[in-house]
Amino acid sequence: MPGFRKGKVPRQVIDSQLGAENVRKEAIREGLPTLYMMGVIDSGILPVSDPEISGLEIGEDDDSVVFEAKVDVKPEVEVKDYKGIEIEKPDTEVTEEDVKRALDEARDRFATLEVVEGRPVEDKDYVLFDYKVFTDGVPVEGSSGSDRMIQVGSEDFLPGFDEQLVGGRKGDILDVIVSFPPEYEVRELAGKPATFRTIIKEVKRKVLPPLDDGLAREISRFETLDEFKEDLTGRIAAIKEAAGERLARERVVGALVDKTYIDLPESMVKYQIDGEIEELEHDLSERGITLDQYLEALKGSRYQLEKAIRERVVENIKAELIIDAVASAEKVEVSDEESEEYIRETAKASGGDPDKVFEEASRQGRLPVVKANMRLSKAVDLLVKNAVFKGGEPVKPAEPEVGGAVSEEVPSKEEPGEE
Image 1: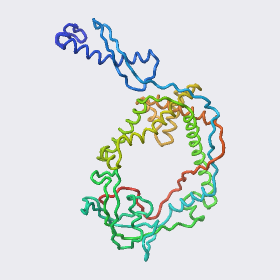
Image 2: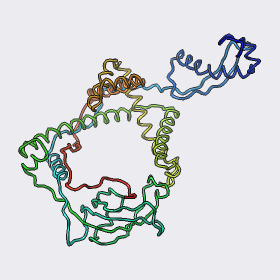
Image 3: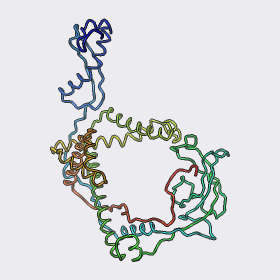
Image 4: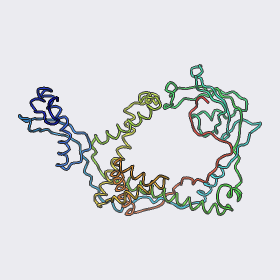
C-alpha cells in the first residue's frame, strides 16, 4: 500500500482497505493446506483421497483455527504365508517347433512377390488396388486411394475388407462393404458402414527362399545353416528364459492376491478409474473425437466403460499394496546408489546418455518413484525365490529378429485416406 513498506502495513489499515472478512477468508484459504499436512504428519496416517473439511471454527481474536478433516487412509494389509507359494513352473525348454517357427519367420522376411496370372485372388495373396469410398451412395470427399497393396487375411486395411477380395480377378471392379472403426480419426465416418468401390490392378503371391546355407549367409553372419540354427536356438533360449521369469512373477503375485483380503477404499479405485478415462479422453480429443461419440460408436455407456476398467484397476491396486506389505515385512530397501545405477544402466541399454538421463530424472524429482518401483520389484524377486514350482507349461517365445523383408514393400496397417 502507498506510504508503507512491504510487510509493515498495520492490520487495521489492511482490514479497512480490503475488509476484515475477506482478509480472514484469504488467510484460511492459504493456511488450511499447511495445517492439514501438519495434522497428517502428526497423526502418522497415509491419506489416499482428498480431505473433506468440516467444523471450521475461528477464535474470537483470530488467533486460532479449528477444523476437522475426513480422509480415506491407506488400507492396512496383513500378508500371511507369502513364502512357499505353489505355482506352475513355466517350461523354458527350446523345442524343434520353436526353431522351425523362427526359421519360417526368417524365410518370410526374405520372401519375394511374384505376379499371379490366370487365377482369382486366394487367401494369403497380395492385391494391388485402387478404391473410392461411398456412404449412403454418396462419394466421400478425401477418401480415395490408388496403388494400395494388402495381403488377404492380414486385416491390415480395415476389418473385413481383404476377405471380400477373394475370388476377384485382375481388372474386376468390386463393391466392398465394411464399417469404419469407432475410433476412426474422421469423426463423421467413425462407426459408419461404407462401400469401397475397388478396382483390382494386380495379384501377387509370396515366394519363400530355400532353407539352405545360402539363406544363412544372406540373413546372418554365419556361413552354414547349422551354425545359424545353433545361434538361433541360443537366442530363443534367452527369450524363453526371460518370458518364463515374467510369467513366474505374474503367477506368484496373482496367487498371493487371490489369498489376501483387502478392504479397498472406493476413493482409491475411483481415482485410478478417473485417471484412465481422462487419458482416454485426451487420446480421443487429439483425433477430434469426444468420449460420448466414442461410446456411441461402440454402443456402450460410461458406466460400462468404468465397469470394464474397474476390475483391472482393483487387481492392480491390490497387487501393489500386497507387494508393498511384503517389502515392509522383509525390510526391503533401495539405496540411492542402486537407483542411480539402475537409471544409468537403463539409459545405456536404450541408447541414451546415462549422465543426461540421470540428471533429468533428478531435476524432475523422479528418483523417489524409481526407488519405490525397485523396492516392489525386489519384493517380487523374494516371492519368486521362495516359491514352490510344480509341473511345467510351455512358454511360447517372441520370435528373435533376423532382419530383412519381402522384396517389394508391403504396406503396414493404416487407415484409408487420400493417397
